Image 1 (cartoon, rainbow, N blue to C red):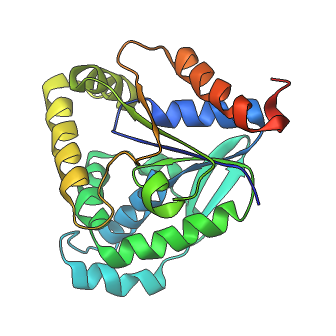
Image 2: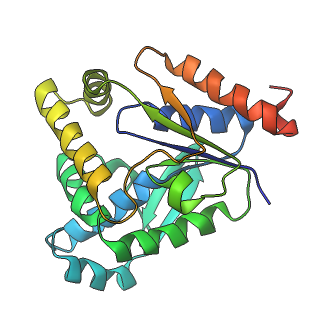
Length: 223
């Protein structure tokens, strides 16, 4: 069995950057599960389907093949043979991913893909339901969060958007839907360590996570 590190948290909390840097330090598999949900949302939009039309979204899952590949050191998301990684952060996809991710059949479909990608490897996996649903028996779990204003500034800088208030409102909308959805809501696993990143740099976040991993996994003691 591989050693699984589950990192869940809110948008803009730093979980993606932290998870990626930790995986690089350990030379372990990195998996951003949010990219798989964005891939479905992207495909739905490409097919001209309303993301709120659950029946039609479910119908096209049979036409969808999602792969995660490491190319030049970067996680790339492949949809039906096309690298769509650079198309998954548009405002349209941002809005479509919320209703799409609520659908039970979509989440079940993607959990199967996510588990297959990891396949007993040492892995750092980040998302919103990793420690509660995808890998409830993960060896170590973290839940990352930060003040909404700080998260909005981070997301604005990351996505190159101009309207900070609009970014903040979008995060609030996403937080609400993620935590209130019926299927796999965003929540801290009972056995997860809470990491408030409001006043932490990325390096500080990475150091905290790696230090906890070192205590449990002999293979990283040399780092």
